[in-house]
Image (cartoon, rainbow, N blue to C red; front, side, top):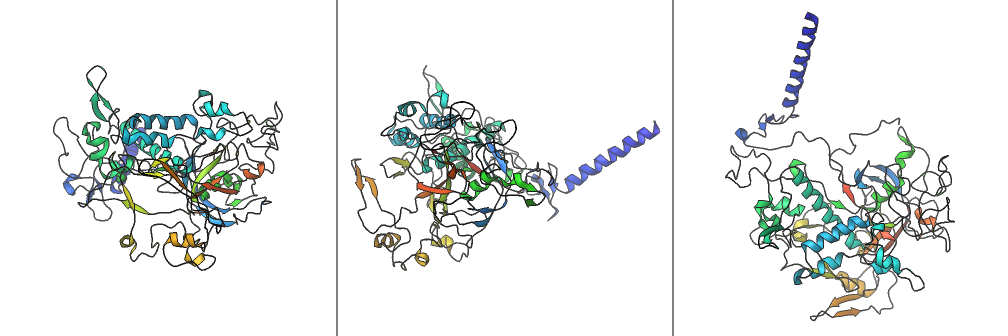
Length: 574
């Protein structure tokens, strides 16, 4: 009995010592002592400096898969009978990130469309183009000599295609979907944390003469607006907030009157909100698709891969699934799925996501099904001399727009701006309720050594220094019209006159030698309409960013903040 009591006392002492050490090192909650100054952190009695000392690991967002970064050879194709010379192998390092487990599906995109139509009713003049600008082009299924109207009518809307990848979306639409998804995910987080109420918006007349709370116009949750000006979210309706987080900046919580917001709003320092969903860069997409992690033994890679799976064939060599196709693609002229029966790939067009085995990162359909938009502006070369770390071409740096009083400017129904696409469609630059942004100027770049202008799309590739004939002095437009420019694609111009009529101005110049400009984006991977050649993750193609097809879809990605290695990392010998 005495021995047992001694063991108990020793365990209690060890536990007390451990807890004391945690608090001394800033590992616990409450008033933690700073190892820098000795002052308490998160203590209103000592100035109220706040820091989340309990933060451990970024959570994986809905639908995402963790991809541990590393080095790989980008652009190493196994076959190049096209002789495009546009994917010269370069050694690149990709930082850790998250990517969608599957392509974005029809049902996910329909959720987005429903939200847009509910929040921005098409019956209101200032909103009437918002919903239409997001609609996929279902006419991409039409063929002059094909009977495809069944897809025109049903592919997006019919529940039979709910879990099929959405197509008919251009690069611009895909990018805007990512913004919407970021806001909805972060709004849900704040609701689950008890900071926001479940139903928010503005009070409006109900059907029975009462009032109901609806989300309409700019009265919705925007992540960037919340972080910059939380009092402007939901149209300034503070009743949307349930309760705030602990506020250590004063001895008493702010707004402690009955029925008012108590505490403080969440911010980046809390680590509650997710980084933004976005399109993956080309280097990220190719790295994730190749999944060389499956060929790792200790600290070496054994063998190369032609596809997202091992082997030189698109058929399984495993005993239980031997001969099964590992993706859906066009096998030959007039052959989109093979012979009916067990050898068929199971799809003549697209197929349900997760119909084929995932790669070694656990990601589905990185070959076949649909090709996918990535974030990069297309150029034939990857300049690894300029950068070999998380390579991306397409940076146009911007900042929040401020008014004369230094306050952030919000987009509203009155100042919303639209861009006119090549087909005459109007697309909002930003939705009402979002913070207006402008490109950085010369004052922002003054004396900087890492960049000197906002638009870096043509950096070291198409500017004066790399132009074929030495370039022309003056504006970018003057250089392009001269024809003495690296990428002098036709300058077709589409705009609306004062009466809303579409004016098409075709470029009739005979000096154009390229289809490449600053609005062509890379798409990666083979699709149901492509031969097996395009299933190689290193292959790359390009298309105008406002053009859609029936074989290009997309998936989202997200940055990983903090430590590059996930807490659940597998041992090196596995």
